[in-house]
Length: 141
Image (cartoon, rainbow, N blue to C red; front, side, top):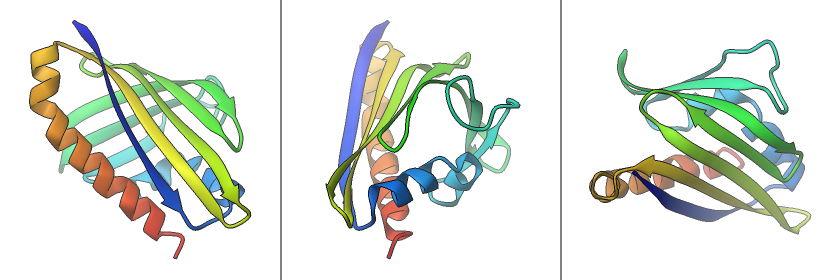
């Protein structure tokens, strides 16, 4: 198994706190993430210890990604560890304030998978996340 990295950054025309508040609404992420339904599975709904599940696929056929929030530093950084049977590694989103009305959203994932498998899935993963993040950015227009 190898530790593989993927990262995407984009500019969002909105104040950093507004972007953070939107990202932190876990169930609403399914509105902009391609073919994904997201829900909180713990009593804690924000902060370290929050448990989240995301099913990506068509109808009820897909890949279940379970996560645990390990870092919570509003309005800048959230980190998760993927705890599922299939998806392993860590994820991070980090927000940087450019000015009062502009935020940079840095998204990254460490995917633990055989290197060859990662290279096979990388293009689809990258394109899917890029499209999803662009959809998220458009919610602020």
